[in-house]
Figure 1 (cartoon, rainbow, N blue to C red):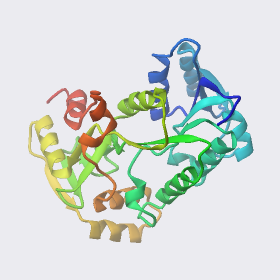
Figure 2 (cartoon, one colour; figure 1 turned 90 degrees about the horizontal axis):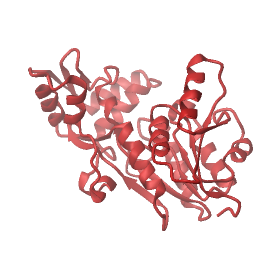
Figure 3 (tube, one colour; figure 1 turned 60 degrees about the horizontal axis):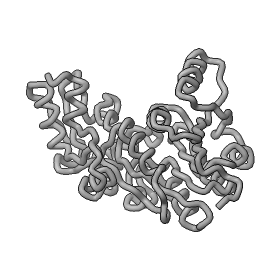
Length: 304
C-alpha cells in the first residue's frame, strides 16, 4: 500500500447515474476530516456547470481528467493520494477503459479500489459470451487478483432495476402493456436500483477490509414469469406476453453482430451469471432494506 495516501480521502470516477448516487450517499454522511473528490471530464456545456455547482453544494471537490483519452500515467497521477477509489465509469467510455483504470489504480498504489463491475457475475459467464465487452471485465479481475498491494472489492449488483423497464431493451414496455421473457419464463435476473447500489457501495467502502473479493447485492431476484405477474398487478390488467428464445436471440445477433442491445439480450436469456439468491447478498446479511421490483413499480406507477 502507498505510504502517502490519505485514508480519509475518497475519489469517485464519473458522475453519471451511478456516480451521482455513490457521491450523494457519501456526501450526505461524510465524517469529519474526510475528503470526497469526483473525477470529471472538462466541458463547457451548461449541464456540466450545473453538475459542478451541485457537487460544490455537497462539499465535493472536482478533479479534472479524461479517462477515455488520457494515458495510464496521467490518470494514475490523478488517483494517487486517495485512500479509496471507486470507478463509476461504465462501458460507455469505450473498450479498454476498464483495464486502463485498473492499471492506473495499481500504478498509483491506491490502497483500496472498487472497479466498475456493477453488474453480472462475469466469472460464471466466462469468456466468449455474446457481449464481448464482458471479456475486458475478466481481464480486470485477472489483473487485480494477480497482485496484493491494492485491496479491491467487486460489487456485483445485477442489472439496474430501471433497465428492465427500458422499452429499447424489450423485456417490459409499460406503455404498451407488454412483457417478454428472455430465454424462458423461469429464467431469472437479479436487479438493484442505482440509488441502492450507491448506498450499499458506500457502506462497503467504509468498512474495514481484511482482504479482497466479490460482494453481491440484490434489490430483487425475479423470474420473467414473476416479473410479468408483477407488471399485471401494477397495471391492473392483462399484459401481452411473448418468449424470446435463446436460439432466436443468438440468430438475431448473428445477423446484426454490432448491436449492443442484442448482445445483452442474448447473455441474459442464457441465464448464466445473471442472477443469484437474495439470501447470500450483502444487503440481506446486513439487514439493509432495499427496493424490489414491486416497490419500483409502485413508485413509478402509483400502484395502478
